[in-house]
View 1 (tube, rainbow, N blue to C red):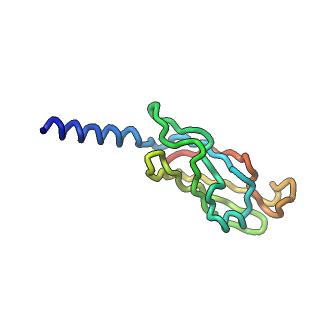
View 2 (spheres, rainbow, N blue to C red):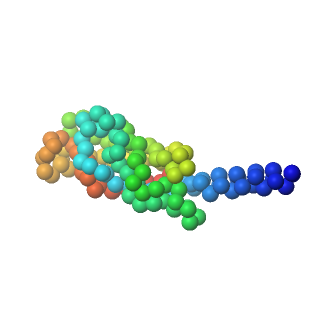
View 3 (tube, one colour):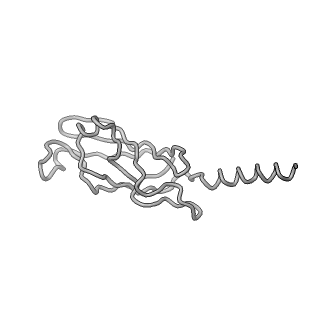
Length: 131
């Protein structure tokens, strides 16, 4: 009985260890659609950024590609705005914090002029580290 309990505890600790994500693990991200401050505020940032490719640690996918990323607006004016990439859900359902990762855009970077004002363009990529 003691051996069974010991094996059970060891298996739990090994599986928990396998899901842990080391700090400074790289996460590649991509903007899924053009968005402005208005779009960000209306949907809370849901689905605007996603993980570009699987994040693999010790041969195991810990964050899957296409996982939505939680972002929030840090600052916004008529001419510029800055977003903060805050956290991601791991494959085991845990929340992975992102280390000091942000993106900035301004009206000067909006080369097409549509929509008006500062806009993040679909396909914009960012690489951040886990905390």
